[in-house]
Length: 183
Image 1 (cartoon, one colour):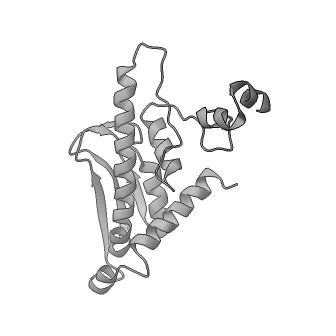
Image 2 (cartoon, rainbow, N blue to C red):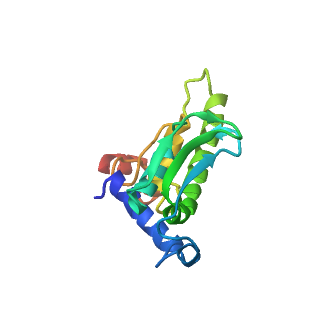
């Protein structure tokens, strides 16, 4: 069984294969290899920031020479204009990592923000927001991390870490008593 970090690494490998393929031909043909620059992640909407640590993994995986300076950590409330972090390095690496990083951070921040909204509505109750396995294929670890960052709780990761008897199990087992006894 793969670890969380291995699954995230696999996802990033796939993301770069989808987006960069054999190379960003526009960047490679227009930007000198030694050109250096700085990129900033500027927040555009209010919400909960999520994915900063995954962004770090994106940059490290693609180009370990990229230097990230974080100003706002995962879980912080953000507003338009806030600068979450800066990344410095070759412009080619900055341009080729930008979309993968943004796609991940936008998705995770959206999930964290929505989770926080639900959690706030439950304040004072003995109820908590739990996630499910109903996740985007390949993105489960990131989506569950976003729920946690937004103040929710992670339930089971997959079919392997807990027994959860549902209606379909009861039906196929011949009844709830049979399902429970078999479990």
